[in-house]
Image (cartoon, helix red, strand yellow):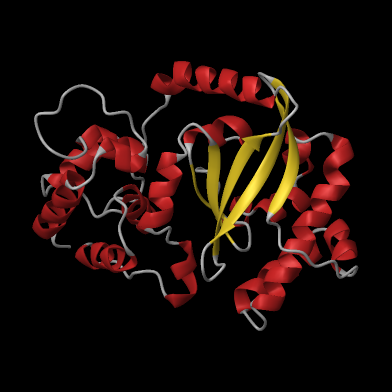
Length: 289
């Protein structure tokens, strides 16, 4: 691991970003250009001390999970991300995983939507990154691992995950999951990852298996979602979907449904989130070597 080159690379990329680039408030007057170290640590989800050690050439080798978070936080391109992995003697994600790297364009757009709940997912519904408002609205997905990061998997294997939505909406939302997945399976015919995911769902859920056999097909571009929030009550939203050019990733944006009190409830949720922001805990990278 080349700690000196890593430190210089991280520092220079940090200095090239402004708070506005990553959706952070400008704050007080800055004596140096770019983001502060504590701001990068916040975006990555690590302690400021850990990130500082990386920039001072004295940190441990980051895990691949931390490297992926660093690449997203610092708005790296795919080439810059691969370079980061090589500096740390880690193998960059292979071709089959390139759709999991959120590019700087989507990350900038997500940052601009700071006051609006938004998230980026793969075409299989795996959550890659979410903004603060999305976490406040439907919960934090950052700690989920494996299949639990996939919307459809949780929907059909964990009944408690549906508590966010009124029970009378469950059948419609479940059918939406299946129809969208079938459209992805057709577009990615022969793809091993898609086949594995469908196989896992068919084995784990009789409900999914039954709906899959109905052959409903529809890409999920716009949908109404009623979200039952424990603090502000039922929120009527419209979920709009923006696809990347190759359809491998999607930006989901939750907007208040016109003619409802959703806008007021989302404003209240935003205030609640601002009040609790300072209570967020920091984590260290568990994989140190």
